[in-house]
Image 1: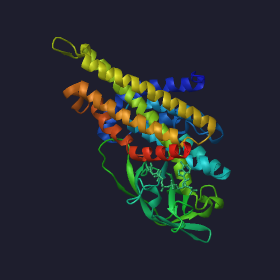
Image 2 (image 1 turned 180 degrees about the horizontal axis):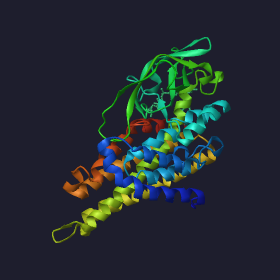
Image 3 (image 1 turned 90 degrees about the vertical axis):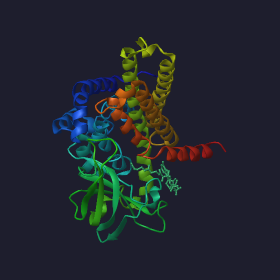
Image 4 (image 1 turned 120 degrees about the horizontal axis):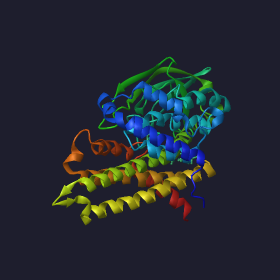
Amino acid sequence: MDFQVPENIQKMKDRVKKFVEEELEPISNQVEKEDKIPEEIVQKMRDMGLFGISIPKEYGGLGLGTLGECLIYEELSKTNACFRTRIGTNNGIGSQGILIDGTEEQKRKYLPKIASGEWTACFALTEPEAGSDAANIKTRAELKGDHFVLNGSKIFITNGDIADVATVFAVTDPEKKAKGGITAFIVEKTYPGFKVGKLEKKMGLRGSHTAELIFDNCIVPKENVIGGDKMIGYGFKTAMKVLDKGRLTMGACAMGTAQKLLELSVKFVKQRHQFGRPIANFQGIQFMLAELATEIYAARQMVYHAAWLRDKLGTSIIKEASMVKLFCTELANKAARIALEVHGGEGYIKGCPVERFYRDVRLTRIYEGTSEIQKLVIAREIFKEYN
Ligand code: COS
């Protein structure tokens, strides 16, 4: 076993740590208030190559692999979650369908624009009646000559309002559904019939927008089926493969946030005095933080190991990705609860990072598959494994 982080990844991680501390954290509350990331910060992210961390170099990315992406997300998640989310869809769910199952032509056409951040990409799967039951999508795609016509709508699409290109899942055979009847399409925002619907007002994650996408007789060229003709009907598998990676990297984000919450808590309890001494002197406080630090240590090993496995084995980390997401996102929520507990009244006041993290981490247990969905996937995998 080699626990050494490759030098190129470590360098980038250190650079991102500095960027977070010097440029992102100082504007965290401003972004929260304005619900918008300043354009100059987005440009700096582009200049650093943050929109294509694990996209291979041949397609314009940094080529740092899943491990690189996880380590960078770990740092980037120690500040307002919207910054990571801004680059998240390009690195993850918005590009991975093309990268994993796309044709060479599709990769060459779209990935460089996505990796450079020139274009924003998003992933459109969820619908009003298809959240956890993703196979129940109703958006329809019908072949008419040399193009498909898409009709339907998607909800809760991260970066949907600013996306230039979307990976859209639609039903091409209603009889077969997930088993040969769902197809993945690359849809550009300029295609006729593509519209952005309403923007959601959320509990947290301000600075990152969540939109409805509407397809009203939307014309999509036949060559934009991800993977080409042979992949018509196999889009559900593409979606699942994309989500496997998404779940792993989401775990990395949650783990980074948990670490930040631990650090904030330790600093706070050392300087906060009650009953004539720092509250850090009380065992009740010490035990909570010691337990949290131990679980973060375990979480970090899981993330790094699963990332290493994916880089080495390709995409077959279904079970591990769900385990990482389940463990790390539950842990981040526990960390937020403990941080709020030790900060007392101060942690409940707007402007305190703990208050923001408390709301933002709740989403990590929902998107890219709820904790219950992760348990279902893990159970299915272990039942297959141990006959
Ligand atoms: N990789 C590759 N193929 C996969 C796969 C994976 N990780 N998971 C499932 N598949 C394949 C199955 O093997 C099956 O193919 P075959 O018919 O050839 O056997 C097909 O996809 C259908 O799978 P399954 O029968 O398991 O589908 P279900 O309807 O039972 O759904 C769950 C599976 C619940 C796991 C899926 O709907 C899911 O992940 N839901 C949550 C969606 C989600 O995370 N949404 C977040 C919003 S998007 S950010």
